[in-house]
Amino acid sequence: MEINPEKKRMLKSVSNYVTRFVTDQEAGTRQVNAILDAMDTVDRRFFIDHHPYVDTALSIGHGQTISQPSTVARVLMLAELAPGHDVLEIGFGSGWNACLIAYLVYPGKVISAEIVPELVELARDNLEKLKKNIAVKDKLDNLEIKNENIFQNPHGKYDRIIATAGVSPDMVSKIEDLAYKSLNDKGIIVCPYQSGPMIIMKKDQGVIRTQFTQEQYAFVPLII
Image 1: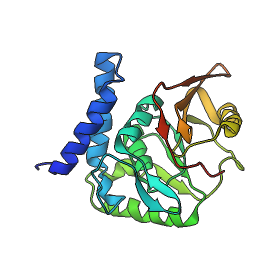
Image 2: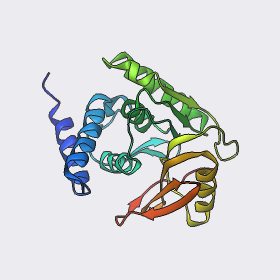
Image 3: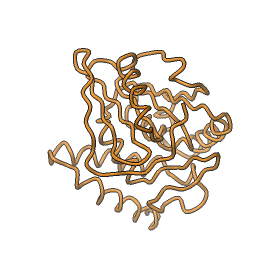
Image 4: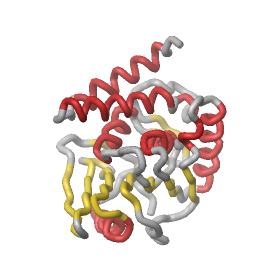
């Protein structure tokens, strides 16, 4: 079936952006192609009803946004997702990012924790709409949405943790605590600042090492 021209332009914009960060040509190309396939399959139009294929962040109400596709792709790259990974997402929002993660890590499990009840209801509705219109809906059966504050009640161990909203500098210690408590060894946390770089924490033999992207981003605040 012919791809929607607007969607095709969005995917091209995403590809152009994330390809610049590829260092290993073979592995990087596979990673980019997997993310583009996920974005093609997990269609953004089921999560935002206005201008779904514009490569920009859009409001979904309650002070939250559906993130810019290029930025989402960058986060997914930094997380180094692979099939079989168990993932915790902090902040379900519209649900698009969580569904992309679920598709990419299947049959790994994805828990998405959202503390705004209205967004949980919206996200569950979006998930059901998507499942009715996707041929590989079984690849989303590994996704569970929880209405809870994961920082107040941390539980479980994960290979990857991804925050979909930004932290202030004084909140970074909470992210590091979560890394020690909830990351498996060789695990990765990706968390943006509200304004600034992405924070990447990697756990190796119980030690957390922190890196930052050179590029800067802007995110709505993470509610803790």
